[in-house]
Length: 224
Image 1 (spheres, rainbow, N blue to C red):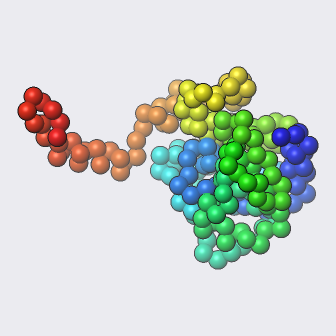
Image 2: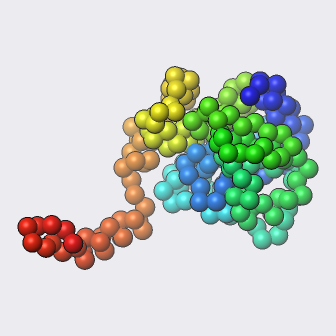
Image 3: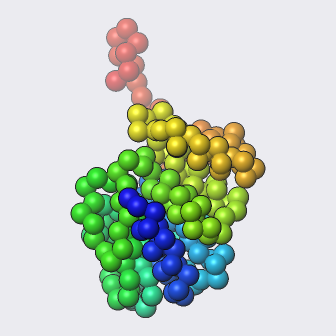
């Protein structure tokens, strides 16, 4: 996708006041981290921003900076100048967030899924990007949008989770260079990786406890 499309998105950001930043149902780290990162940048621009996802903030990602800002959408629709769909290949996968922002004057669609048909008024879909967060980083960087450590941490978490901690084949040299830029903001990568990959929600631990409690061994020590 061309830099001119990013310039158009940057212009829209500067010219409008009220934004809704949305992600897909059953969100992953890329959706949530991208939503928070872009919304925090827009807030630093002085914009009024709502961050909505049908499922709200997942417990496993509740450590992300300003995670409390990401909530479930209200039942009654609200008026917005701009609605931004992130990491959402099909518009209906916005779930209950879609009717809440249906009257938005401008729809922006930013995604990395090849299956995205290009819905919306302004579309930036780059299937070569391993994560939507990588596109958000480029947008912030090229358009000189506000950027700080909280934004960097959200972007790092998003890219890391969608690349399998930088192990999946779609991880590129550009991905690693972006990660390095994010780390240079002062991220504690060890702590962040521990929270992403070595910490578990209480419900998961309770399920594991119940599984272990009911586990029994058959002949030759095999688990049943």
